[in-house]
Picture 1 (cartoon, rainbow, N blue to C red):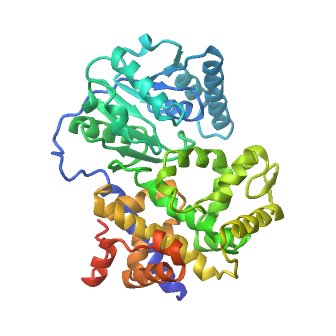
Picture 2 (tube, helix red, strand yellow; picture 1 turned 45 degrees about the vertical axis):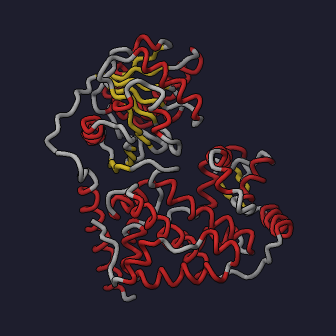
Picture 3 (tube, rainbow, N blue to C red; picture 1 turned 90 degrees about the horizontal axis):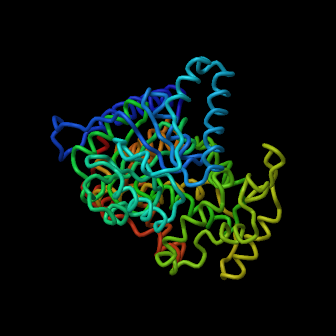
Length: 443
């Protein structure tokens, strides 16, 4: 591609994403004139990194926040972290010292559910465990006023299961903030089966007030973003077992435009976090014993990534160092599972990771989890590091041609044997679009 062609392609992707972002706030089956609920006070359950970051969003917008914890020590630690974050921003000149004090005054800590009884919006940000979240929502159902919106910050779990422990499922919605919540702009709004129209529109409205880019998702494991990111990570980890090195995989992905390769990302996010997320879908993964087994083994070794100074890589401070033990562990697992290691081309790495994402995105569209292809691209470019100059996975697929993507999916379905048959079955929507000589209707 010439320099001029590249510039035109990038400009086209940027214009598309701008329009897709605007469209994301439009919900096809809701009257846009539906009245919204008034939000004067917000409560956040959980004063950890996520809960504290969420609280800061609302304080930054001048909205009063009550931050609830069950232990005094955890609450004090959370409030101190918030102050530290504001002080750092002030030192960098991003916020005035008087603004720091104004925002801090808007955040009130509490150890009692009774103190949040009159909050208009309550956001649960506790540990990603369905039973813990259900327990919180049973308590919220008892103490919160009628008409309060009850939101869960879950990243993966079924919002219906959480909503159904209350007597007011119509007031329950998912608000999936991204970490660090006070910085990341993306907000996935998860519409549960019984979520009231005015609740959905109110959360869209409040997302604008706190400066978020909001996209509405239906219910499935992982919603839009994590569900599509899952096959991307699945292939990166599988390629390790087949003979690629961590350095090669991450280099190929950064050369494509990702800020970080997937293996560096999981070290940053925490291998333990990914392990806990997989715990909820082990039954669905039972047919593939290789599924992110490298990460499960690293978890068992206590190698959680940057937080423990070892994961896929070794870390000395912020310096990342290649770890030959990871390659040896990959070889050992491959031998255990009967996977023949071989030389992997850069082309195969990029095709398998990207085509797996595109194929999963087609399934999401077909299932109605996302309203439009543009919503998917907004999520992936704003929350998952997909290069914006590529426009998102579905815009990229349209650019290179869906026939090329389908041929690639079919190729790996055949070439990778049983593994390929499991994971590279073409999405019916992708096949239909190619058959009809059409592209993804991105907007």
